[in-house]
Image 1 (tube, rainbow, N blue to C red):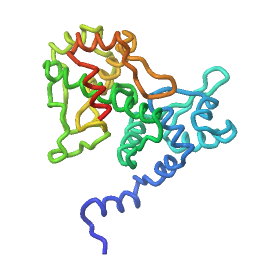
Image 2: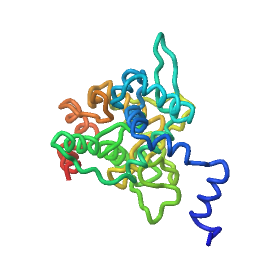
Image 3: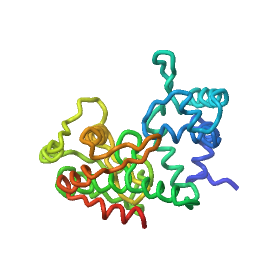
Image 4: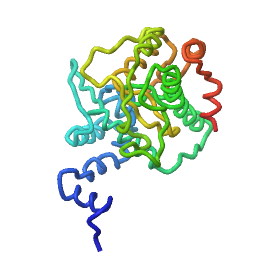
Length: 267
């Protein structure tokens, strides 16, 4: 018996119409292609040779997978010199991968090294072109508490959410940077971005049921933190390290204590 109400009917309707998610699901579901997509999740553009290394396959093998991902709309490719560079087609692709990570079975570290990396991912990582993890959430919460951002309290409430879901872009709230907020952001050299992109967006972070800052402002904040040396991208990873310079900087700017965040990430 098929009910024409609720999620089951909507799913069948979409599969019979334009929104056939079987195509991207099949592309993502392959282990080699999944590794390629995860390697690009920090908004990098990488050549085929490096993606072959990331996926653990030969360049001749990865070539076919890259063609499928480009034709399927998950990757874009651009030529620069003699090489082609591949990147995620959009932020929506990144958010889809983040959501799947939330749906995946819990990760059980099999070694000290993998356990350390899992904690590092929870502590601070990139989410496409902005900061996520406990650090990203704490930055947004501190901006809200200082009235630099208005429009919400930074907390995801599943019982009240309409469109918002864990590990996905937020839609229910509209955040704005206040006049005072630009002063706070200006303390570290962040200026209003000149772009047609929406200034303030947010994502519901999968490490905890809270929001982290995205949109144009989220992108320029991460860019500035990298310039200041407060955060450093780990090689070939979405993990973001916070050196001593950043530990002192975050404490002085927003009162964020990295030791407390490390304890939360290890829990």
